[in-house]
Image (tube, rainbow, N blue to C red; front, side, top):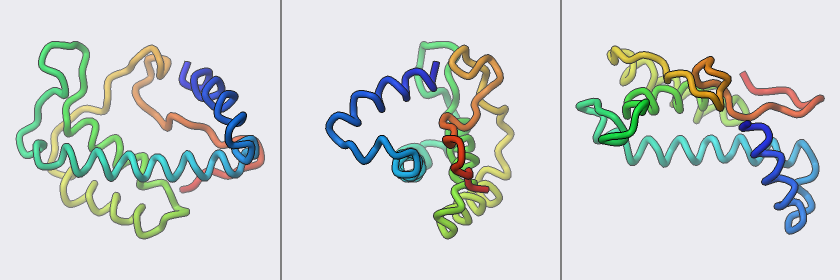
Length: 130
């Protein structure tokens, strides 16, 4: 499902930004988005992760702040095209999340009930970082 959504969005946005039709350009933007999303999530959630809790008070299943932060840091720690950023994520995993006793994100149908994984795939011929 995630791949279908990405393809549908990409098909629309290419009409406005034709350069995004190039796989290398698209993938570089996806990696940049992962970095930005991770920084945003860290800034917003880390202060509230001192005491872990669900992201939503009533919806279930719902991940906790620590689950989301650990997942984002794990994903971003593989972004080797941003070596200092990736190392910072590994440092956060060791020094901050290392003491957290949290389960991986639960499986969701969008992830094939396998738990969360990298939500984007490199196109054929483009190597993934890490």
